[in-house]
Image (cartoon, rainbow, N blue to C red; front, side):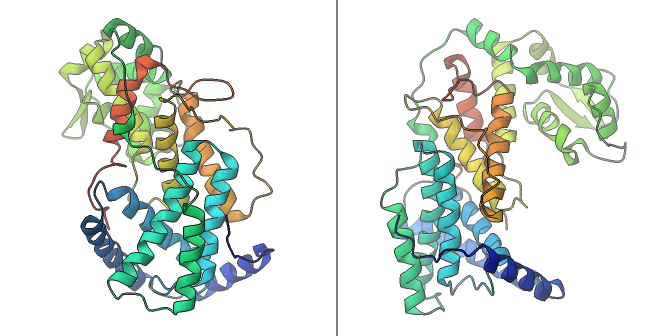
Length: 369
């Protein structure tokens, strides 16, 4: 797609990363973090003034891009980009396309590069650009050449759903693996026990290193399910103890409205951006959201979770593996099904679409700084 980056940069990049890590080991990064937070806040305001629609997906991705460029690009200045920064972003986007050449994959790649292009436009428009004209033109040319062949991102509003019978919806949700796990948590919560990771792990029959001093939210194997029962309104905290809500009985009775809300909470928890998410995780969650949306259309995404990424450079491999982890999780959950392509059965689509919206990825709110 016309990138002007030089070849065989892997060894140079490794040397630069090592040198930068040595320099930054003794440096205070607080000034950089404050500068990034200020730039992202102003960028969000600029986006709101220039474009209609949600700005949060772009600002969240852009915040992660800036942090990642500081980590992977030598002497990175967020207001004075060099071609190396543009090459890094385009390389990551191209690795996304190599992994998935469907509309969902292309949308995620285009979103990444378009966000960077919008950020440079913002710097120029607000007189915040401090780099050279040549570097600016090089970066914008690389970004524009990539984006011009792209497709629009899917939005939840683009998905058309057909009405489904309540009994069919309840049956489809009840067959998902997470439902049995939630049942075990609700059984455990009947005694209003103290909330700690050790107790939750025991209730779920999961053998992971935990202690009664840990919150279940701090243990990856427990965090999604615990957040699901809390977000889904099935369990509430009271003086440090877990107390089932009135809807817990509805869940056990397989009430369709309660099951639907629980599945939405489960999907939202899987997709929700964590404050400290790095660029690969942020890209992976946006990519997964696009995959879920595409799986509800007539052009479902290709399943390629068995691809070998060992020949990719470190940064590209990290992004590809993060995407595989998130998307494969939805396959293991029974939410995405299929052979060569992935789909979501019609009975699950309303709850999953609501979960994608609930995740915050499409909220028009500025990201936390």
